[in-house]
Length: 127
Image (cartoon, rainbow, N blue to C red; front, top):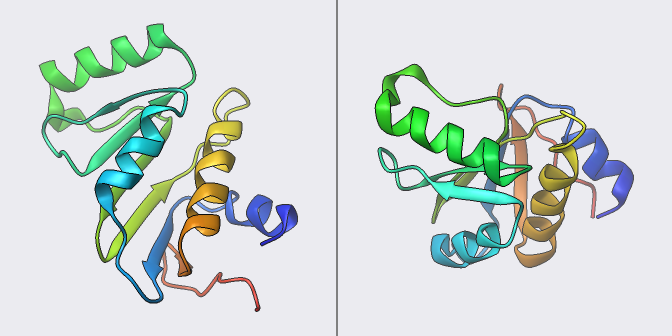
């Protein structure tokens, strides 16, 4: 998958990846995310990961989620990982875009999968 295609994917508000073959391994995804920026697994929804560009913002976002989980998530990279679907809300903020790109590139290199946007439109690159 070329860099131009990944850049095009990152312009969408939400990306939905579905495995084309073996299911996703949420724990392998979690392990990759651990080394991606400054991240935490949401305590309210353990399938959701929040990825921040720095330690300070991660700590602030994590404290806010603990205090008021009904307020939603900050505008950073969000990843929700399940065996049959991974949803990604990429961030185009300058300091977060490289993290969004790294995750999407890793996911596409690690798993054969279909990609759609938030409206279900097919975005999978031609073979």
